[in-house]
Image (tube, rainbow, N blue to C red):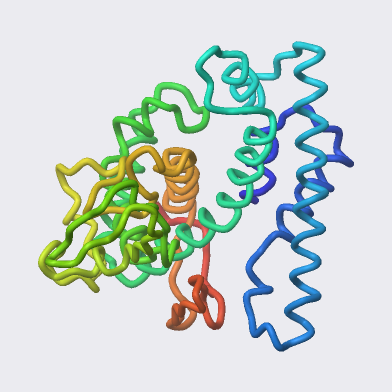
Length: 299
């Protein structure tokens, strides 16, 4: 569902056959190959991932080239990317633009469904938070003048608790187990020197589970974000990176999750079939999936 939504928003003028091919390649680009290097299945999966990446890149490159030559406008992300390429001070060339488009599709496919599932798990186990989330979204429905979908204004100004739920889910999930940064100069930290040029591994979970920063850090508590800035990164909230390396899809990921939660809590009642365990190997996943009882909401 996320891949179908993403591909049409990023590249909107693909014929059905090409779009299906691109979606299949994006879905094939996963982390199932992240297993023992001694197993033959690992190398088979790795080859499949590389092949899927190459084919997806070819589709994106073809679209970017044709759009650049024809000057056609379709109101999608490719348009935005081409406009940036024409700027005098752009930081992109065609190669990096293609890589960015591909990365957005892959990261959204991996990240958005996982965080959405994790948020649903935590909400199912926290009736107070679920009731508050439903209250917020039912109020949006009551105050909506037309009967269309969620508007940008509703998302930005009427979903404060929703964004608190998303931030708390992101903090607990730590989808990126490690981020790498390069020291541009010698850095002194607690008596140690990190020499210029060294690569530093940043582990966000060490910050997000730090009791000095977050009270009861293993507890799902959306209210801890009340009144706080929740979109951009900081030294204590690094779910999307930080600084100039902040994930370009951070806001878009939040929007996707918020839209899903809106339709879920205003349309359905749901509960966990069984408790589901989350493990990291090194990427986060459910050991037995996320199984839900779902029925039409009684409102």
